[in-house]
Length: 431
Ligand SMILES: [Mn+2]
Image (cartoon, rainbow, N blue to C red; front, side, top):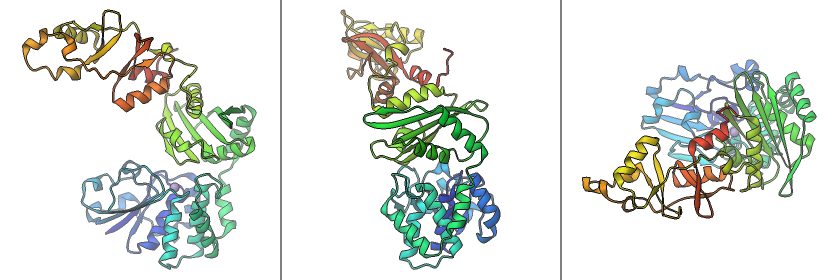
């Protein structure tokens, strides 16, 4: 059996890609996740019978020999497909996202504005017939993911595919019904509120606006609201930080019209994802003001943040001397519950770090009496106290370390740990 599936929280591009793939693979069963967005629900309530869709539960995964994945290639974005991960399958991917962990036998990945563009191109190449309703659905998906071909992520292929779909009688009336219905009273209220509180800043010659507001309950189509906000504010890039107080989470959405501000990249660095022109992230228990600050810092690529490491680092730092005996260090680590400590010379200059990892090098019991300098790591990563937390976090990721000594003129003044950084980002501790 061949099945086609797409990402959870399916949007129009996901459904369009699913149906377009079923044109290319007529023997395959299209499997739509049960979690789909509200627009799509409205569309399917009318059009469902036209498409022979299956839900993940209706599929006997034992029988699947070929899996076609569209508009994603990440296992964790699929619904109910976990058991397939271990099976020896033929996997075919059609996707426009660059990131993903699904290893495919056949990869059709290109950074187009919409995933359906890639499939439409193939439909045209193979001279497959499509109905006007299919053409309409494909164009809705294409328009939604490219903001009607205006997002910076839009490629010539997208515009070309749109032309092809119009030629195949895509219905622009139906299209506008489903694309605009998303703008209801709730969305209008939020947009008004955002505009009332609107601020503009200039960073590196670009205009940016960040709206930081509270929302109640689940609001559909915030991305579209943000897109409208960016247009009304007439800025190069706009970000919305929507704090859902009840659920204690922040939804962050970004839209950029310029190449220099890559929203996908920004969102990935705070745990989300997206394309250069559009992206989002979801942060639990996060302080919206901290996120706003963080976004501004990320955009400006500014190493000198207003919140310095010296504000959040831990101190005083437990250090040991070059000649401290290994057994003594072991005791100190046990007592302070640290995974490592810096090693300093008599003047307090850092010379190395001894961590639990280094203890693995110790084989003989007499080594316990040796000076720590024999076993410490000399590749030390330090950071100066006027750097930002983001800079520290980057170093931790780069060197795979959980703590970095903070220095001023070569002397240790504190230490920044992963948990300090998390506290800053997520504001988990009381002020
Ligand atoms: Mn897509």
